[in-house]
Length: 100
Image (cartoon, rainbow, N blue to C red):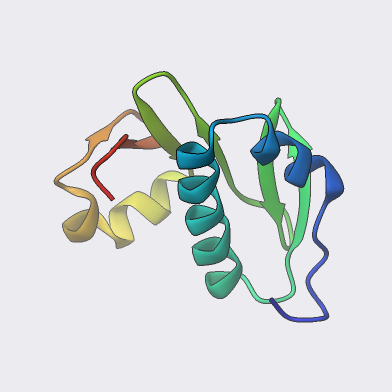
């Protein structure tokens, strides 16, 4: 992570509240987002870890059977090929647990 990126203790606490396996996956998601969003800022919004840079870039969260990222529709269009194997809603992509 770059010095210009602002990590949030609240996001650390969100991640720490889950099982070790879930923590590992959440940290992978978090790291991937940080690589893609240099200069971003992290916070909790809508009860989920959120990364902002000139507005909200994405949220991520863990659920009973999957992890989700919540993105703008343009993101899903741009990465449609990479995301087609995953369950999706209008604004979210779901990644099944245990299949990373």
